[in-house]
Amino acid sequence: MRIESERLYIYPIGDEEMEKLIADETDPELKRAYSEMLRGCIDHPANRIWYAVWNIELKNSPGAVVGDLSFKGLEADGTAEIGYGLAEAYRGRGYMTEAVKAVCRWAGSQKGVKRIEAETLPDNTASQKVLYASGFRPTGTSGREGPRFVLYIRRNNDG
Image (tube, rainbow, N blue to C red; front, side, top):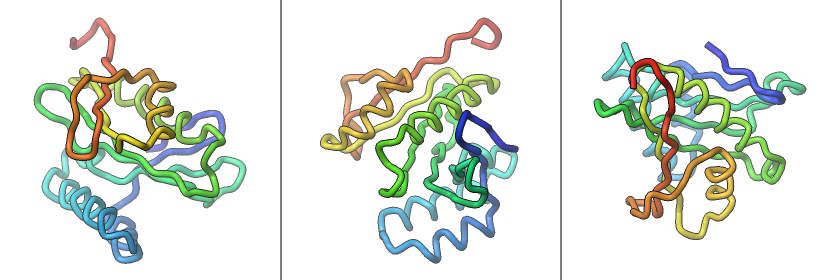
């Protein structure tokens, strides 16, 4: 499966690629997060896509992975939480907003998805700009990392 936007290909990676990502990661927090995602893939094979790491690749530079994103499962109430990161050299070019919008359009078309949530560190204004530009709005609550945002899915089929 692959999602295509104007400048990007966005696609989930396999378990072996996730294992390599974990082995190569030097940031302990990211290593922990990637490990949790892999565990979700293994524990929920039928819903693997909701736990996998999705690479963000430039269309004009095949193989140039500039960042990644992931969902943190799909809850029974229809909530999917998204997280993302972009290599510093590629920030400020709109890539992450483009990726988040594309993946949220895809997620919103999936049966049972009612809302997508995210949270950012309070001082991460770049991430907050991505969320606002992608249609998310603050919930007025905070999670473990900071302020929470939500994007409600509007459709007429399964609610």
